[in-house]
Length: 389
Image (cartoon, rainbow, N blue to C red; front, top):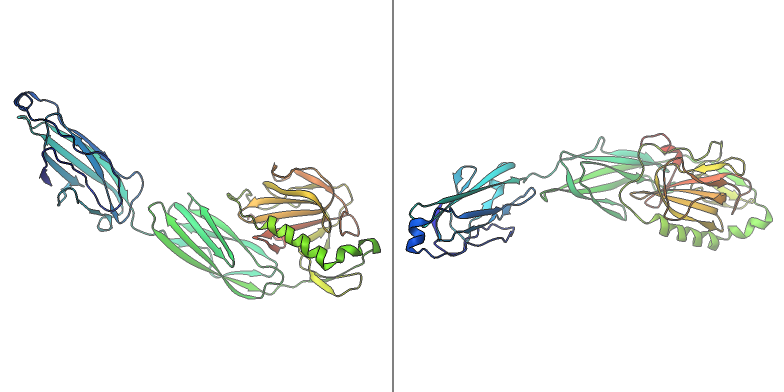
């Protein structure tokens, strides 16, 4: 494109504003006309990252004697149009790098010519999202990660799982999003909705069907000594569960754990996850939300995975308690401890000492009650031991 603009303002525009420089007027005196040997200064400000749709590339040209002719090329081809409305519709270009060249001649006798080039990248193709399997099957009381893979790096993602919406600033191409079905969640199909944006802002959506299948849970009969029966008061149980829900409901980023979980103590299972319980011969209560591991009092209890201590305090029903936030809505909890050896906010690594096993709270003997919560939903933690989640 050849455009004579003299000392007028020149801006190349197209949709996304990148305000920059203007042509600086200069006087074309006779001396300047005959003696000037300096070419115009040409400056281009192109988008720094991938762009889509219509874009703007702003440029500035200045010369002491004045600018005469300006020519603009895209990938070696002259651009049609004239300032100030020169639009570049990247949707008509192939994805990838493109070269913008600007040449400007001054009004001197020699027609000194300045030149500048800039490279910008276009991307008008949405990312391709895939999962290893769709639908995904889990049983009541199970939790598992759903691995979402993109063919390119993503700028952000958003997950919708039931009432939970989790925005994620990504900068990555693979993310395992954990889903869980509680022991009382009804069997059926639920949807994990994923929306992703690449670096240029192209949007892609993916829906993963999660099929919840029935689980099998035992029944436990638990004798309770008279001094502990006040802890069976439903109001006491509800208040404590509500308090803990405020802890488990916090979703932090990034995920802190890698690989499978470690078993926090070595001991036999004395009460399985999801079991229906009858305390002191009463009616069956709500499901057991963790797994009880029988160990002697004073047994060291270690962190199952990397994380941050979200809670470390005594509770009425659960006794001395530690809760670890592993990121992305995943928590583990350790109850009935005789001693707590960590502080809230402390970073821990897998295998670090959290406390000592005991029988504080509603416990009829020394053991560790160990829980896994995923976005507040209880699931069997043993399913994550060594599983590579």
